[in-house]
Length: 154
Image (cartoon, rainbow, N blue to C red):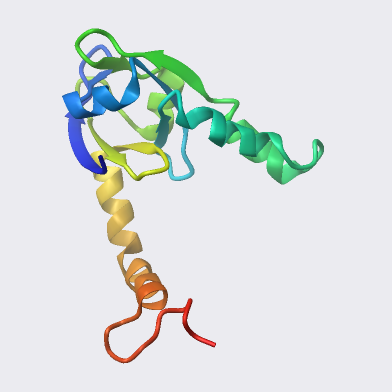
């Protein structure tokens, strides 16, 4: 299931997931930093595929090392309790700007992974990206005004 929910971060730094989210996650998740001061959340089935891609490449490639630091170095497995709650570790909360007892976490399933955003950061990010996303959509899917998608252009 794809889509988004908004879940409060309680005073104990926990987020309670919705039933449909819990059903997809098998009792645990892997959390790590995302590119945009957000968090990436993987099911136990998704994580190995993602981590394997980071294991490739040159061992001494500084760019790959940075990706490994960002994703693998910050990754942690978190158990869901019997009520579907997960506690966000402090370092990841700080990265994503999630304040216990105050923040609202937007959780999005984007198909290849889940993302967790502090809600106001997500709204600001999407507002900032709106024009670029519209232009990308026009190039990718066509504008409907005679333009062809980039995949069909010669």
